[in-house]
Length: 433
Image 1 (cartoon, rainbow, N blue to C red):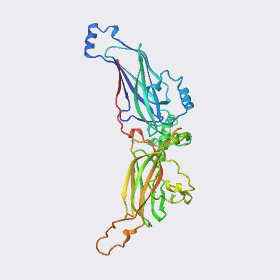
Image 2 (image 1 turned 45 degrees about the horizontal axis):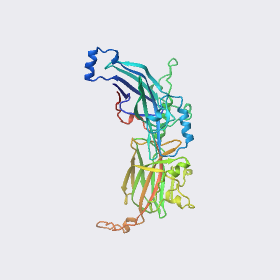
Image 3 (image 1 turned 30 degrees about the horizontal axis):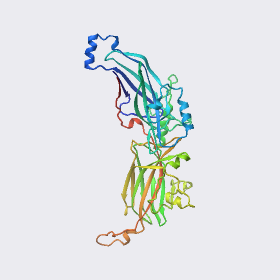
Image 4 (image 1 turned 135 degrees about the vertical axis):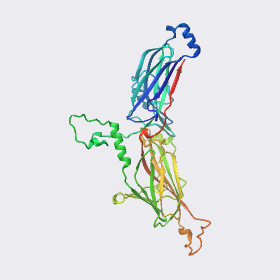
């Protein structure tokens, strides 16, 4: 009996970024139980007790599982690309279509193991930059697995798969134009012409660019109003965030003409099909629960007046010349915050971004986006409809006329450093009898 064990070298996290190197240790052991050990001792471990493996290989596969109707021409082109790369039919090893496959690496040929003997092999591979991230959506799934295949002499091929999670890193079109500085004191020291300068990899340039994008502050101010007048002003400090960060904003209700009784902010993920034939199959989510929607939501960065523009919501888009709103695809709510703010002048909005979600990405079949979904409950009754008494307490009315309006604000979410996400790995094993 042969036991195969596989474990990733990175023990604290089984998460990798596109373009990053994956390292895996693979063990092949000739398992011998107590009764078999006594028989082996009696035979003095003759040649018949050896286990012989003809070959073993390892490679990385990206699978796609979808409910979309993909044309046969697309499938033929994908299979044509895979033909010739490997003799292992990886399509039959997992419930999905292989869309990205690395070249197989041979671990050994003609391996003979004595009873109780163990052989360890090292496998490393780069995650393809052009591959999609790990994603589990409504109508489509992308997932990665390291496939370890081996064959005993005169037996069928056995496979062991090790799942990993892949995060997308934006590809820099012209990395040579992006200046990268190494944050060390060596940059400030006098240059030595005899020392070799360390080359910066494309992945490091992408991480540097991603750090600059998510750290850049660009406050945007949104004027919130409906048909009754001005409700408030929302400030979003930056439009791009990383996994694990908090989306922080502020709401200012000073000098409002319409009271905001309460509001809720939801972080939502949109799954939009890209091809026309897919849009008919994917049902759209409609914000029909709102009574009223924004008539105008203007944005200004504080200095540049040219940035002022109007953004339509689901309700106002339906009123324009009878046109239907843009399809919002399949929407999933990830986190929610809620506040009661009738007599509040200013408040904060904090929406956390979990580490387990998938950042913004786009493939040939689907476009995954993120947005903040606001729901405001407003009332035209100012100060409960009565002035503040000079003495005593102000009593709230038994009934309060309210209206609800919704607004969607798009945001961009990028990947975090995989080392910052704690996801301990486990050992995967396979017994070949």
